[in-house]
Figure 1 (cartoon, helix red, strand yellow):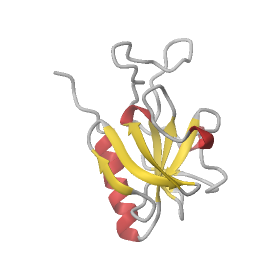
Figure 2 (cartoon, helix red, strand yellow; figure 1 turned 30 degrees about the horizontal axis):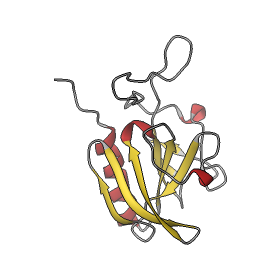
Figure 3 (cartoon, one colour; figure 1 turned 90 degrees about the horizontal axis):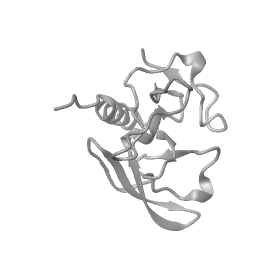
Figure 4 (cartoon, one colour; figure 1 turned 180 degrees about the vertical axis):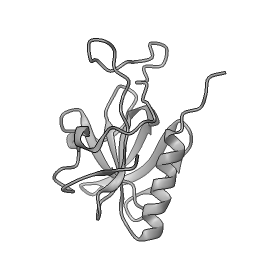
Length: 146
């Protein structure tokens, strides 16, 4: 049996912290074949999603998926994000959060599980200076928990 990733637990903990502090939690997602998000909002293969309680309906975060319904341009849509696609979670108001680094092969390409199509992601956060902040238009910085 393989060891369970800590990422879902860390994301849920930061989500709860954001909500309890009155902040808006945002998920940064690298879109892949398994990710179900509105494609009109995907930029450079990535999307930033407001997952706060006021923006989502029926939000669930288990150890494999983040699932919810949300309105995009007034239209309700189902969103499904595998944790393998989550590259960060942060508070919109402060930028405080954590980034996740995908595993890379020797050529620098993202490693993908051929059986599931999932990208393997390490639980180690990237150093703050190396994080590609997906949401630069939303926040000016992203503080990374080490």
